[in-house]
Every structure is written in structure tokens, then in C-alpha cells.
Length: 159
Image (cartoon, rainbow, N blue to C red):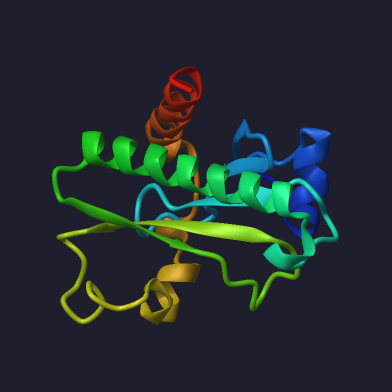
């Protein structure tokens, strides 16, 4: 993967050039996270590049975004539960403190996490978890990508 899509994740997704995109959803794009120290970490990217906050959207688009966040959360939950018996739960967050575009984080949480962070926000993980190449998204995550994508398809067809 080249890094040029990282400078404009939403624009790249709209052009079909963001390699992390799993599926196109109603309000944006379900994408797998760049780092996978918690396998299954995913992000919902709004499909409107210049929107920074949920409140910037009209009410109908807000509800659509929240519905897609729920769908991605459930897909990650189902996929992770099927792949790792130590799966515990999913945490959903809309933060926007670093990247100036609307996105939601979907963090799977597991029983095998270190005791000092298992009950804490994922942002308190040591910095090396975010930068260590062993946790970088790669071909070793193809089965995980497929599982989350398949669950998204199943949830869409059940509507």
C-alpha cells in the first residue's frame, strides 16, 4: 500500500483508491483501520469530505451516519466473535480531535488485552502499539477483512 491515499482518505474512497475500504454504505465507507493491535478495528468515513462534525450534517444524514456506525459495529462484533473466543465487546466513538473530517471508530475489545488497558479507553494504549510495524494493516488481515465485509453484506440483506 502506498501512503498517498492517507492524505485524503475520503476523497480516495470516493475515487475507489482507498485500499482500506471494505464496503460502501449509505452515508459513507466502512474501512478497516491502518493499525490492528486490536484485530478488527474499523472506521466509518462520512462520504462528505468537508464535514467535520456530526452536527454539520442535516438531520437525515446524521441518522444515516449513526445507523451505518451501528451496522459497522455489529459487523465487527460478529466477525470478531467468530474469529476470537476472547472477544468481549465493541466500543464506538466519534471523536474528531486529530483528523478534521467526520468519522467513527469501531474498536473491538478482548479478554487477552493487558490488565492496565483492558478497562480503559483504547487511546491509553502505549504509543508503540500505534506505530509498531507488526500491527500495521497487511495481507495477514485478509481473512478479517473478508469476515467484516461478509457480515456487512449479511446485515444489509437482512434489512
